[in-house]
Image 1 (tube, protein in one colour):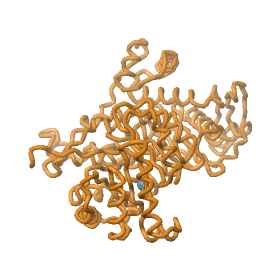
Image 2: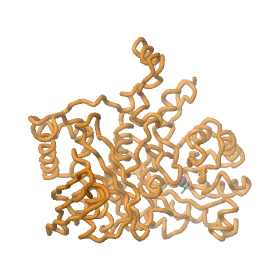
Image 3: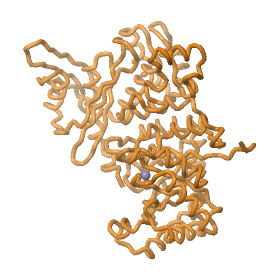
Image 4: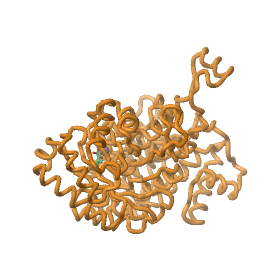
Length: 515
Ligand code: KIV
Ligand code: ZN
């Protein structure tokens, strides 16, 4: 192993490519919460969005650029002046900013999607990078669908964009078509054939359609010499998703003997980040998911348990605590005071913007502690999330409900909630208790939204746990998630439904996160 490992740059695109996953669309405040956590995770680059795609995304990037100090903040832009200028405007306040511009280079995309000739694409790529360099000296260029593009054409385009000042070349496997050896070799060949290739950092960007995004990325690093990996938390992303950040980071750390690379990420923040992203997007993490799945460190078989007790490394290659798993620890209770609560928020890295917000969260904590003996970190995180969510869009606000179910009878519910500050009480019946509360709410709101997903997760273990409900609604082409937590899952459902309606009601939410 060489003495001085090189650095592997971790470029997180949860807030951009991850958000392109249908249903994972986030509000500005949700993006800010995730960006803050990504900074705490110490990722090198945060791709905060695609400024020209919507006013909502523009504002989210602008806010993140103003807040984040330790990571570079990046915006995606198509290869045209309008998109690039918009990205530059959104990033103006960033301590460190990057413009990421892209254009498709495969024959299929150029002919069928762009309806442009290769020469036109070449020229547009060159001019885009030249224009982007007027705003920052950190410019990334991606040949979209790179892994299905002609090598001679790629050489021409990439040489030109590096000449124009592109500092990162991101070789995109847009449709997840790559195979590790081939993908890695393509990057190596490009680096060998392009005379100025050493003037840029090479990056990998892989999709997981064939389940090989992580393997392809690592081949791009080891065979191709890439020194930046683009990835998302929990592998979130369009279709089958992107390269999972947690898998890349832990592979490189655990097999340092092989990779001999340094990553700056604070691994102990991986699980908290995974939980936050899952909670905000409503995309649950499968239990057997590497590193962040609930079973990733659980040993059920007797032989394994025996081995672990004798010597941990018999069956464990990583330690759960190193990636941020904590045993469900009772952290606070009914008698805990405001200071203890505030200190725990700080320890969890939760920043509330004002003392008024701390007070509101504390009073919610007290309400919860009256009903639940032991409060865990997960409870605090859910409670703060709920609080922050309700601050964002308060058009609809949950007040109370009563619900009746009895064998042989149709469940009925009465829900009290406020609509723009005015309290209303609505009744409804349904096939089950959740259907009844949704019908009660709809009798007033008449949103007509379609429910795409309803999921309930226990926040901690045991029947005392709070239930966290996610409801995904779709209306007129927009898809939004609402999340609600409560000890009573019917109440959590009402909160989740109202929170989703709030997002549908909000005007700044983008219509379509896709390109
Ligand atoms: O998958 C892709 O090609 C992309 C580019 C915009 C980099 O996300
Ligand atoms: Zn992508």
